[in-house]
Length: 273
Image 1 (cartoon, rainbow, N blue to C red):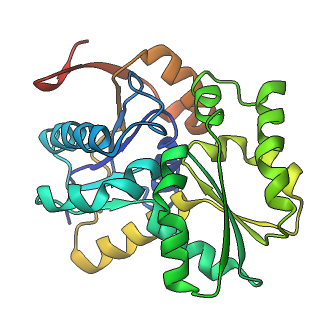
Image 2: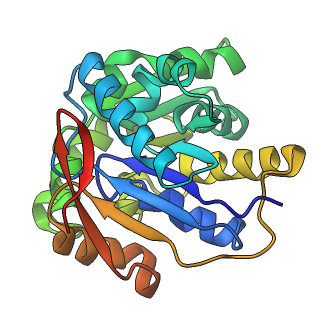
């Protein structure tokens, strides 16, 4: 038994979809969450910037006692995860490979759509990884730069958000896809709108689900799992904690209570209040 927390990080509220899956699948696990809301969105950041951000955040999560790290950000997972894993002596998993695996299992026609940030699409990670599992697959990718800023503001059901989704999804529907990968952990906030556009014949893959399933299997094999919860989840952000809490509670409800704010500096991440 290992009662230390799981460290989870993302550019903002998106990684809370992973926390929700942990709460459901691993109810005895405690989470230390970091949302880098002062630097959101990550989608158009350079790989070097993402590597620096990840180093800062993972160091902070380790200082908080984390036993395992989930990079709950597809942009980070697709571009710098392999480099990050070499630098830290702690298990780290991203969300893009589990998502690609789930898509490969779900498709019947081999025609798979991916919506994600500019950085994730530019990396080609989903195309490459899906083809590792299904070499003959046809993967159609669309970058969705408008979605993360809208979700971070809490514009989940606004007319602007729905119109943006339609602009991004209609070209994919014209490709006759049978699976759609939500290649950003923010996008499950929009799941009802997405389903209305895609209809019942397209299977939706949420990489957060497959990632936590993989973590659960790892914990069972390695003995890292906890048998009792030692406290509530803890949430910290680099930007406005009140906005994060308002949007985050739509997903997590009352279990998202206090949110701490952290300052970012050249010396790393420091608690400011």
